[in-house]
Every structure is written in C-alpha cells, then in structure tokens.
Image 1: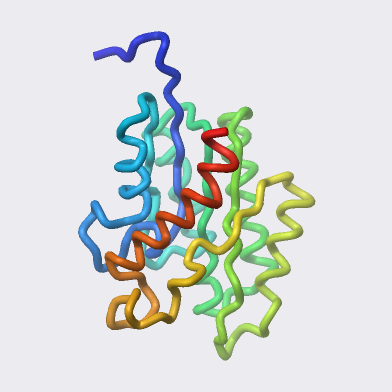
Image 2 (image 1 turned 45 degrees about the vertical axis):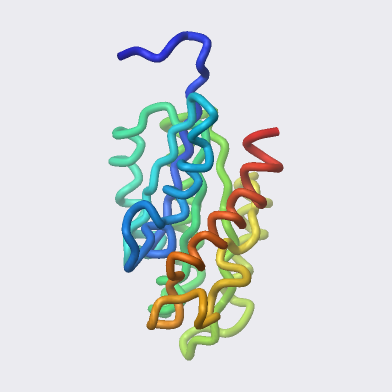
Length: 193
C-alpha cells in the first residue's frame, strides 16, 4: 500500500556493531528498536538497525551498499563504530580511512544524506594508547563535515547493573538508557527540530 503524499517518510540508518545490534538481547530491546517504538505515534519514520556484532569500521563499509539498496533514499546515516577496531588494535589511520570511505560512499549514492558520527573513547586496552582513537572524530568533523554526537553508552558502559555478564554490552535496562541518550543527543536537537 502506497503512503499518502502528505506523509514525508524519513529513514534513519544506524550503522554499527554489537552495541547497535543489541548483542545478547531480544531484537525489540536494541536501541534502534526502542527509538522506533518511541516514534510509533509519529507518521513517516523508518528506523533501520544496521548493527552487526563484531564489525570493525572496514567490515561495516563492506555492508553499506546492501543497507543502502535495501532502504533507498535514506535521510540520515548514524555511524556508531570503532569499539572493535580498538579492541583488535586496528591502526588509527586504517580506521580513519574506512570512516571516510563510508561517508564518501553514502554521499555518492545519496548526495542529500545527513551523516552523524558518535564518538567512541579509547578504552583501556593494551593495544591502544589513550587519546589515539579519539583523534579520529574531530578530523572527521573538520574534513568530512559530519555532525559529531557524544558517546551513546555514556553512563552505561562498565556499570554491572546496566550490563550483561560480560560487563560491556548493555542489558535491557542499560539499552533503555542508551535509547534515551540517542533520543536526547540526536532526535531532540537534530531530527525533530
């Protein structure tokens, strides 16, 4: 059934890893699903969970075309990637290159798409020096003119009461907090304004 002409469909693709996918949780508990539920009373929104557990920035780049074909003419691309690059010790320059490839590819296919990138802090990992990975984000903002967002897992990561037994991935309660952060950081100031 075709949507009425008066309804302007707005598609948001969340491109991410296990944090976006909702690792260890039922699909309805992922933050994109919770955002979709929150928008249920507003017509015309399409929220796409493009998260896949284990993805590095490069892995997500190679999945991007499939997402763009499956959801034509997206209005917004929200990139929440980098944790697996840090955990695996992927070089900062390599990760930066693939962030750029994602941005360029999305804009080449859909020139009007608005792109947001969520910052990822350098976790205390043996293979990364604090601050190295964070240097990617101001460069993306300056060189690619993306809108930077705060870290979605702020106030959740490493809090046992809000995480699964692995101590990293949010549980259902933690994922609600992540969805609230996404709403406050992205939807209220940028997409619903």
